Length: 156
Image (cartoon, rainbow, N blue to C red):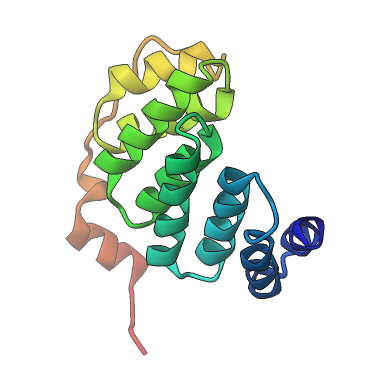
């Protein structure tokens, strides 16, 4: 049943995969992976509370299951709870510090929170464009009134 659920998941049939994986919980021992996959199925179906619930159960079963931390991080990112997302990605990095995606994600979270130096520090770990600093400039042509005039926006 687990293999069928996994195949359905890989084929983007999340509703069917979720049902199959829930059934697999009765027979399989790898609860952490199954709950993670159910969480992913729920997330893809926009059932965010259920997704969070299954990721957390996965971590209760195996506190070192990095994918569930990533799943929670992505979930919180989608919900724009960047602080929680940051905590989850940091937990994933503790488990697997060599995963470049984790560092890229954490760098993005830092950048969103205007922590440019920390973002660069994370991105430099994975050989993203190695930068010493980022400079932004403010110009009059970025002002809202000017943009609206230039775009000549007409609703409807």
